[in-house]
Every structure is written in structure tokens, then in C-alpha cells.
Amino acid sequence: MLIQTTPDAYEKLRHLGGMATDDVLAPEDHKFNVPREAYSQPRNRTMPAGVYKAAMPNGKTISLMRVMFTDVCKYDCKYCPNSVYVPRRRYGFKVDELTKLFMELYQRQTVAGLFLSSGIASTPDKVMEKLLDTVEVLRKRYRFTGYIHLKVMPGTSAGGVEAAYRLGTRLSINMEQPTQAHLERVSTMKDFNTHMLAPMKAIHDLIQRDGNGAVGQVTQLVVGAAEETDQDIYRRMTQLYGQWGFKRIYYQPFRPARYTPLEEHPATPMLRAHRLYQLDWLSRIYGYTPEEIQPAFEQGGFLPMNVDPKFLLAAYSYQDQVVDVNQADERALLRVPGVGPTAAKRILAQRKAHTINTWRDLQAMGVVTKRAKAFLGFPGYKPEKRQQLKLDLFQEETKPTAAAHQAAGGHACVGCSSFGCGSCPVASLKGAAQAKAAA
Image (tube, rainbow, N blue to C red; front, side, top):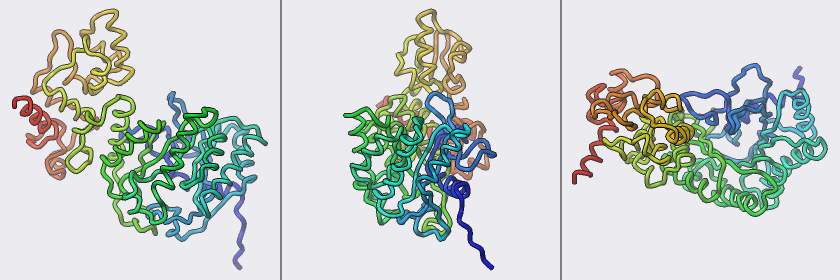
């Protein structure tokens, strides 16, 4: 005899908290030195289902209840485990059920905020209405004034966007792909302008003219599902940061899901997402212009997987020159590998007191000297050309073996002299720049 039971709120949380992992949220741990926001895995594996550690801008973490209102979705995104292609049991909360569950976890001090998303079971506005009802109950009935990250459903009308702006702390719409052409490769039911760009612009306009609602918006791109290049992503990145003032863009490496049309599509290496985060920082934090970043891309529009783009740009720009640590301005210092914003400010402050003339001083200021030695100098120090090529200037911790070098077609070397590689990207960039200068 088959006995069917109705799932309670905690069983729903186990399922819908797990399904929300496709929405990137900054965890406490990471791989490949990728910024914390790159991957969505809880550090403490004994934490309750649906509870995740999120990294804040100040470096601290906050425990959030991350959950989908429902995993029922009518859309046909070819990589999504919640799409119409996947035959499995679906779950959904009721508004009172979800709000009571959240407040119970909040009162137990298990969570301090909410990350609320959903599949689109009917129209975007109807699903958005359920999410708004949930947040409104928390704000008004339970007097919850804390952090709520609210997903705005793609295609939500202007009225729904404004209501979300009033209730949420931070808003986001998953852009998924950088252009309409790429979106068409993974979904036949979404329109790039109507579903993504229009509500994003509406949020930006509200933030600009009002200032009494959500503090900003973020988005997510799925990397590697639609054969997009890194340069395609970079163009969209510059538009979102420059035109609409986005707080962050998250880059989710594609992972094949069972039963979806892209089930056999190869997974995207996490290292590619890492390179995109590095590119993001060069643009958003270090102030590189599109013209300055252009040499980092290979001919096909991708970033090299085996080298930090900041080092690549420094090798292209400085050739055999050395940046004088006692004379360079902040902009020039920030373009030296191993020098970040904090280290650059410390160098500028220290120079007012005395001249910097040792690597120990620079290391104490936060400079990664192993990466900076080929480009940074002070009185009495100038690296030799051959020394620059032998330094371990790449971000990865270990050097590849000769076998790995052969498998990579001659592009896995850490320095030109490591394997006698004539096709090293560093050597080719330096050679091209020197030839151009000589001409």
C-alpha cells in the first residue's frame, strides 16, 4: 500500500534550499584563490539545509537563509535543473509557511538575513507577487528590518520592480548570457531586452532618482553554456558597471544537469571563472580601461588559462622597464602585479616619511614581492632581463610538469626558461612589444 505524505516546511527547505545553489552567493571558502563570491558551497557541512555563509564587503560573513519559493518553472533554459526538461517532484512554499520558518530560524539566531529566489511557474508578475507578499509579511507583520536579497523575476513589470525596490535590501536579475544571440542558444522562451535589460534599467532608474529603497543590484552570468567568449562577457561587464552602476557581477561556471539538453556538454573549468573575476577586478577596482585590457585577450577572444591577466598586461606595457616605487603615482603602482589597492595606499603614505629601499619594507606593506620583482624597483635595484623570465610570476602555486607542458601544446610553462619554450605568451608579448618599439 502506497502512502503519500505532504511535505512539511523543513522538508521543503531541504529541497528548495538545495535547488537555490544555482544562484551564486558568496561563501566563506573558495578554490584556486577565486574571490569568495565565485562558488556556492557552505563551509560548515553540518549547517541546517538552506543556511549559507555569505561574504560581506568588509570581509565579515553573514548567515543567510537561501531558498527558492518554488522550483516549478515553465521556462526551457537548456542547462537549468529546474527547467521543464527535468522530470522530478517539485516543491513550493506558501507565504505564511515560509515567513514562519524564516522567523523561527532568525529567532534562534541561525540566520541573520534572507536570500529569496524562485522558479517561474506562471507569469513573472504572478511569481513576483508571491515573493513580494513574503517579504512584505516579514517587514510589516514580523517587523524584520534586516538584510533581504530579493530576486526580481525576468520580465517583471515596472510596478513589480518598484515594489521589490521598496522592500528588498539588494535586488538581482539573473542575466545568464551576455547577449540576445547567446541567450537564444540556451532558451527559446526568453527575450533579452524584455526579460533582462528592461527591469534592470528600471531598477537603476529608481536607485538614481529615489534612493529610499534597495541599495543596489547584482547579476549572474553562466559561463560556457552558450559558446560565448570572455570578450563577449567583458563587453557586457563594462556596460553594466559603467552605465547602470552594478555592485557586482557573478560568474557561474556551467555544470551539466541530468535530463537537460546540455547534459553532455562539457563542464566549464573553474579556472575560467577565476580569470573572469580577475578581469572584473582589473576593470572595477584597478581602473583599467577597455583599451588597456584589450591585449589580455587571445585572438579568439578568450583569456589565457595559464597566466594572470594583470601580469600579461604588465609584461606587454612595461617590457624591460621598471616602475620606481618612490616616484610612481597610485595608478602606476596598481598596474604592477603583486600590488593591490591597500598596498598602493601604504606605499604612498610611507613615502612621505622616508624612501623605500628594501623588499622587506614592501612585503610589510602587503606587496606580493615574488610577483612584483620583475616590474617594481627602487634605488640600487634593477632586475636583469633573464631574471624576469625565471621568476614564478603566475598566480598558481605549483609549476607544471614537462608532461603537462607537452599536453598543453607548449603553453603551460611558468617561465620561458622552464622548458625552453619559444611560444610562451610572456615571451611573445615581450617580443612583439620590443619589435614594435624598435620599428
